[in-house]
Length: 75
Image (cartoon, rainbow, N blue to C red; front, side):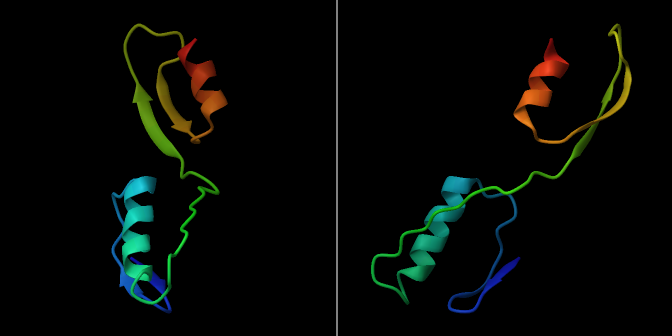
């Protein structure tokens, strides 16, 4: 949940950026004329994955959400 003073509490878990932008636009249209919603991801939460099988570096790794690191892992 996230709380906005003018529109109240919203459940946003699982929404994509475009879906959240549309939801916020719809809610803010009730209190603002022609709201312009712009969202930006400031950081990603790390995701831990287990790499198994015939690979060079098996084991538990943490993916930070940094696209450059993901490219390095795949090569």
